[in-house]
Amino acid sequence: MMERALVVSGSEKAMETIAQFLHEYGYTSLTTAVSGGEARRMTQTAEFSLILINTPLSDEFGHELAVAMAEGTSSGILLLCKGDIADDLADKIGDYGVCVVPRPINRTLLHHSIRIVEATRSRMLGLRRENSRLMGKIDEMRLISRAKFALMQHRGFSEPEAHRYIEKQAMDTRSTRKEVAQKLLAEYEDES
Image (tube, rainbow, N blue to C red; front, side):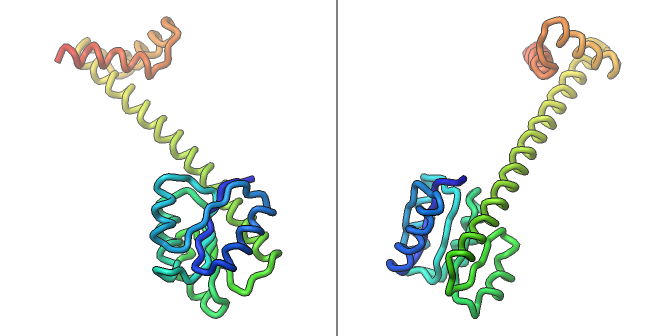
């Protein structure tokens, strides 16, 4: 379960109620802010699993903050607002991954909303990890291709010969193809 949460609320009473609920729900580290500016500063120095914004704030309504937090952090974002504007607000900012919850709110609805945000955040983090892994694989393939090109240019190998050479060097030296490619590039780039 997530444990760090930021509660942003212009209302001290609402902030205390939300903070108490989140603590009971399992968030062991709670931070509070009364304005969008204060919340933005806090997210520059700390990572939060959940950011709960209770509108309106002292310096802005709060939906701008929700969008900024959705774009700039990996936090799950919950935005609490009056029930009569919740649907319009959800239409405006839902594409950013912000969960809009209408007030008045009850514990069951808040509990389910947090679970949805947690599940969405978990999936997003999994996709980011997979994206990072794939980008690393693409970088490795580019490096190996550059090493093949260097072998073709400097030793007159064909592409299949360069490929086999790198594979054989990796097996013979018990290295990865990436390590072999890096050594080859270091050798041939020094000659240039």
